[in-house]
Length: 90
Image (cartoon, rainbow, N blue to C red; front, side, top):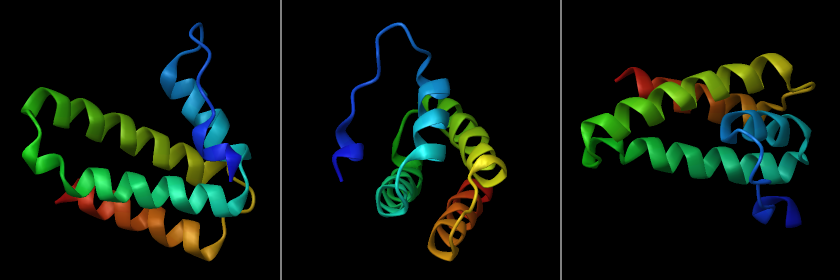
């Protein structure tokens, strides 16, 4: 699970980096990353509005990208993606 702590190169856009990482990391690492993201979006109501809006938008784009480009997306990852999108829709 060394895939969980890889640092982003300074010259790379964060969202592009996350898309690349999440579509290529092992299933177990992806489950951990998606679980963490689900926890993060569950707490967005406590964050300032500007951060919450930006984070929500970035997360929705990221999750939809993963759903479309990750092949295959296992049942656990698919469920986590749907749960994240559901929380964002509330």
